[in-house]
Length: 189
Image 1 (tube, rainbow, N blue to C red):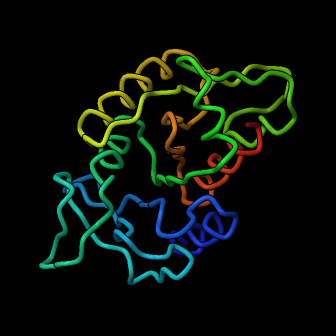
Image 2 (cartoon, rainbow, N blue to C red):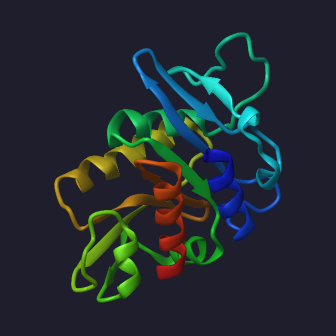
């Protein structure tokens, strides 16, 4: 399921070249996720392409392949968002929007907002946090989790975060739900 959804998002142009990454929760205890490998074309992933990693972001079971550089951000989202899947892409309109945004973007009255889980009407506001980018994944994860903590206190926040000049991290219960959230952010942008 994760390979198929990753391919769908990549085919939309949101994971161009070898960019983007995806993961799915395997187990809470001990913590384990299946993570996309680094530096590969995401349209060509097979179920066996994914790397099982633990809470430390390192491959398990003697796997020597390199998981995505952004694995630790995925781990942090699982630990704080309570999700089952995370997809990260670089959708061009959302990235462009992030360059001029302050700390959030807000959408109101647009039918497509209903793509976000739990949204049953367009007559509402859905907000997406915009955080500054960093090559330090611990720092980026801290920024994303800070935005997520604020979002948990208010149901107007969408299940996604926009990283300025970089891309979108979207999460959901399943890979298809996370992918739908990522696609909705781009459509609304």
